[in-house]
Image 1 (tube, rainbow, N blue to C red):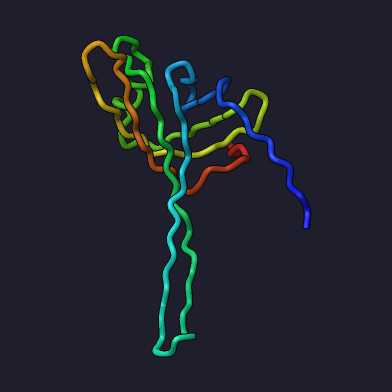
Image 2 (cartoon, rainbow, N blue to C red):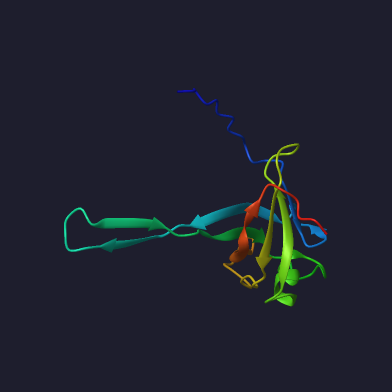
Amino acid sequence: MANIAVSPFMMSNATLKVAADNYEAAVSSVEFAPTSATSTWKGLTPTAVFTFAQTSTWTVALSFAQDWATTNSLSRYLFDNEGKTVAVAFTPKAGGATIYANIAIAPGSIGGAVDSVAVSTVTLGVVGKPSFTAPTA
């Protein structure tokens, strides 16, 4: 059995491209997450139990500073493009691997608490699943 080396990283110099624009300056968190499920069938005998893995569905959660003053801010982009599917490219570590996905756009929240930065978190559906391979045109 092989000992597999681990290479953890600090997410502090990442990039996030949504459609044609980079938004990493506005975003504080990006997290792709799978939801996995299984189906189980049981027969009449104790040994007649069968479990089947289902294909995972994926989402991506983005936390970002709200910006309603800048015409092409992420806040405005999500608001103006609700329902569209667009490509994203996320590189969690400069010089590292890039994760590509197509996501379904939904708007974030507007406003927040007094005396604090207005932030928003959206969870967007991923069409299919993320990939480490860039899509072909």
